[in-house]
Image 1 (spheres, helix red, strand yellow):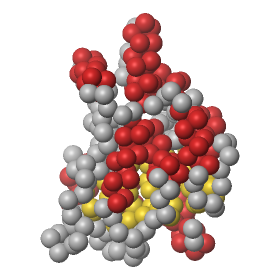
Image 2 (image 1 turned 90 degrees about the vertical axis):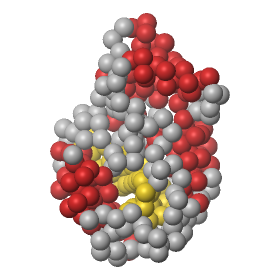
Image 3 (image 1 turned 30 degrees about the vertical axis):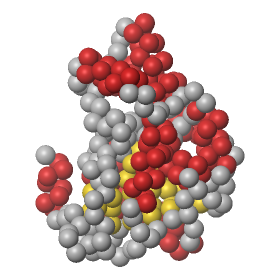
Image 4 (image 1 turned 135 degrees about the vertical axis):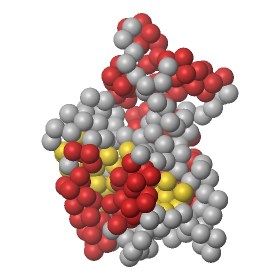
Length: 277
């Protein structure tokens, strides 16, 4: 498959026994650049329903640019939209029965733990709804070792609408009553109650003049452009750069505009390194 071919092409290697960083939590992997040039480590936060391999295309760009990368599995990962409904429902029920924290708090704690295992300065690269965890570690956890943030198709406000879109379009739940029930449950489990208030507090506590690259997709059926714009309209002190991929669907910029996507990332990181954080 793609992951195997990519690994062979770039000759990626998990850190060996001589490297001090081992045993990363949450099935974490440390991937070394074949031509390392930069000291910052890029930490990937995959999209909801994905897993640590979902960002291989993104890793390819950063590894070739000379950055080491870290990827790990978020709680509730590998949620396959094509799997049976009963399987998806059981995951939700199991979450409720075990009294687990909401997704936003859990993902933030996971990311914070991964960062604790890594030395030096880091760059965050987040996809879709788990991008809230980046806001959580920057503002809520007050991390000082994160120096830049790249986010694709998130974070967003209008969480109810975005989860409705996910359940209706991607999970393909067509029964309106069932859709309303599932959306209510997933919204609460995600951390939808007090969602905007939490993000407003976190974003107000992020570092001043912090460099952020926000990537958006014009034809996103899950996360409307206005939902991302509303998030970044909250009072903040980011040094914000944005790019809209015309015609691209959710997280599709890297697939349909790969050359542009790569150039935008490289230029943002070059500017970040020249101007500092």
